[in-house]
Length: 468
Image (cartoon, rainbow, N blue to C red; front, side):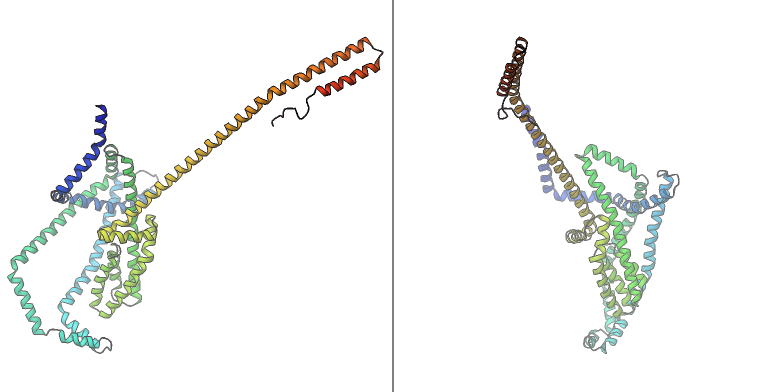
């Protein structure tokens, strides 16, 4: 019975996973509908988290600066947090307002100029191109295709009739659009409030979420480590993206000023703002800037597009990979691979998130590789030490065995030589006491005794060798 319970416990996770997969497949549409409802309900909170994350980058820089200026080196206080958070919001809002104020009026002015004088401008440009040897033939053909004033009036009447006949549909579309815009503004304002609460108490929120993950999630420490690396890479990536956008916008504005293009400062701001979107952002800015320049000179607008394409290629191949790669600790090749694959799979979202996610995976693999390499090296050293100690023990045991075999032979030979020498000395003394005058016989006996001693001593060949 106990063994049956163990088997059931072993297969419970597998059964749970299969059941979840079955429910996802069978009730996919219902789950997607439920997910959309939950997403709409939590949209304000999601917007608040995104705003807080972006503002936190600037707020952290201000807090570090305030800590360096503080002579007492006090920890972050509520007053300092409030001041740094307010300053960060003011700076970001000021940048957005400046872009809108600088770009908006010029863009609206150009749009009105194109819409009011479209026909006259086009005819004027085509008349100028008629005298051109390369484009003159095509300009004459386009002039023939251009409608006259009466035709334009007829077109306006048709458009007006269409709008009047479909007024109900137009009003419905306008009402839905206005409602969506108002909902978006309200959600953004609520998200703004959420972001302030999150930033003001971010340490306590982080500590609470960390404790929940450690308690309720299997291997929660590893998950928190991944989250820390991902947060660091996203932070560095946003900083690098802003820096690259500033570099690209500055180069664009300076180049346009040197080449005498119109609106260099305005175009530089537009390019820098749209370049926050990787790869394709500068092209979106190029379309806006080219449209503004087109109202002044179509030829210069064409030359501007060519110039920006060259500048964009230089940025994509050299500046962007170097700047972003240095901040996220990723080689230039992998930055390009992450942007290309992420953009092809998930579009603009993939371009924005591809580089930090790739940098996170790269860093985790690198840490695991170094850990395994160090563990393998440590195990190799321990095995080598074990082998050395084993060889030393074997050598000591062999030497002890040889010494133990050699000791009995040595002791027997020494005992025999000492007995012979003692008997010879006793015999010589007896002869000296009994016959003191007989020196010759004593000498002969001593000579014989010495010969006997030499015969009784073991030869060098029979002596046991002493081990060094």
